[in-house]
Image (cartoon, rainbow, N blue to C red; front, side, top):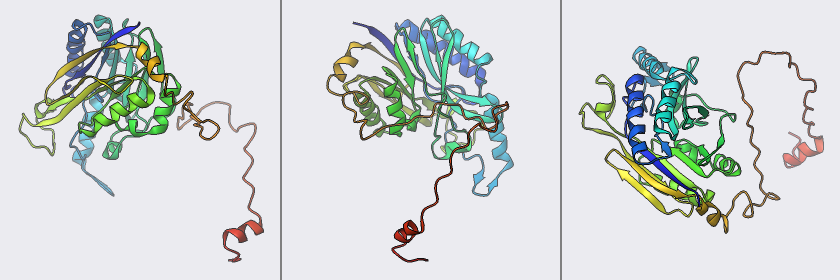
Length: 337
């Protein structure tokens, strides 16, 4: 029987302040390690903040100078991967002697990505996942990830992967995670609605995996004083109420949900429960019908600029055949026009 003690951290960073946010990560990982955690999960965009309530001065067809400055400030607080901030995060994981999964705002050139980073207990950066589809106005600030950063990592504590917030409503992404044998399914999120709990339990049941969902508990005081949030200026205003939880492979709640307070939830995960759960449901095995349904996943990087000698391709794809006049007539109900 393999038992893994997992912790999900419901807290807030110092939004738009990378150094203070990293200091909070260090303190919180130390606290979680004191609870015996072998796996520590942090919320979406923990370094350096989820830009809740901002519109960045954007309307269709126009942007304001103030909004551009807000984006610049957010960009300045983001992190390079790898870089000094990932070294600091790795140091926090090493001191805690635990695997760590944490949501960050990643900076690559002029573009920001909502990403998740995976660290080993020795501090090594094991991999990253970039959010494939930012939701609604998130697309103002975050670019789109591609299929090259959707790993499920084989670690000593189990097969570890992550999907961020509403990515978890993408059934094909979930299927790709299940096909990679995910056991510890991390779901950092910014969704604090009651309905999110149904999502976490559904994924655990569907994938027969442990789901560790983690959200921030954040107050207005966790954001800069001059932050133009539409929630108001009262320092005690709740910006995110949390809702973190840990679910087992049969959909049973092991910890949480925790609302309206910071805290660290822990649970002992019996990995044997995964095999027991797959006895009657394995969506990429005996419960699949590949003769009817099949998923094709492109895991290649898709950079916008490729430099090298591989262009043009040796073989161009054959063009699709033009439909015959008879077929066109059939499509038009016999009308030659």
